[in-house]
Length: 141
Image (tube, rainbow, N blue to C red; front, side, top):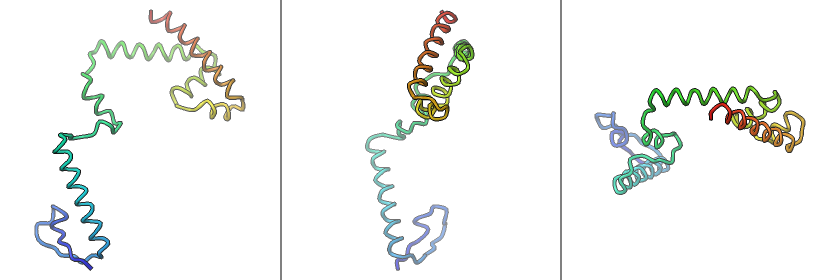
């Protein structure tokens, strides 16, 4: 058994508090402290304060300025035009395009759910996108 001081581990302890733990726990705590120290040293050495690879949008928000009211209005109009074009499609095509591109359902899953071939779903989506492209060309340009 090893004895550790909880004051060294937890900063909110203001006085020494010694606890007896197994050697495995003591070794795991030592390893974790070393890894944390190494990570801190690397951040200092390479001047990296946070990772841009997280996928939480931090790099996008740091590079993009706040949109103007005109840009927000244009974006809203574009989205409304997109949904209007989607609503103008025949029911089956609209449902398939929406499910595939908005909800992220794969063509194979759509085909399995509807009891049709994957090629039929793919053709339907492709035709729907062509129709939407024509509708949006007329409306936006």
